[in-house]
Image 1 (cartoon, rainbow, N blue to C red):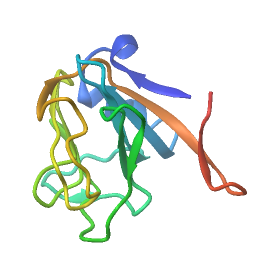
Image 2: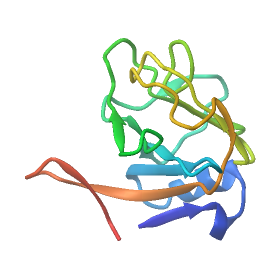
Image 3: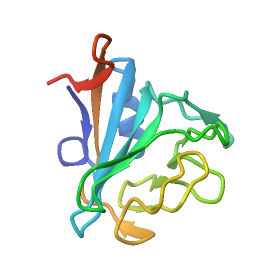
Length: 152
């Protein structure tokens, strides 16, 4: 179920945060660069901005990318608990070295680099990039198969 899209709701992290509160639970942040890579992260909705850089999330958080041709998923390594930071002007996933994924408050630009949290390499074609579209989709878990299913 689509909670937020820059194409539908405009380019604003504050709107994304507000829309994430509509249905709590696991959500899939999907974005990409202008060179065709698709990447993102599994987060917990509602996203709650903090006044200081305070990490949130659980070990269910992960990041993914298609930059290497086929989809690659990076789960927490256990090196730290830097799952994600949500501020009014920044959403960043992972840490220890670099953010695995960082989006600015206007959802126009982002960055990605190797993070100790997920053991990932850069999720995009370049470390700094212009964002294509940003979406947040509500997800559900299939307990029998332990798979993540998008609720459409």
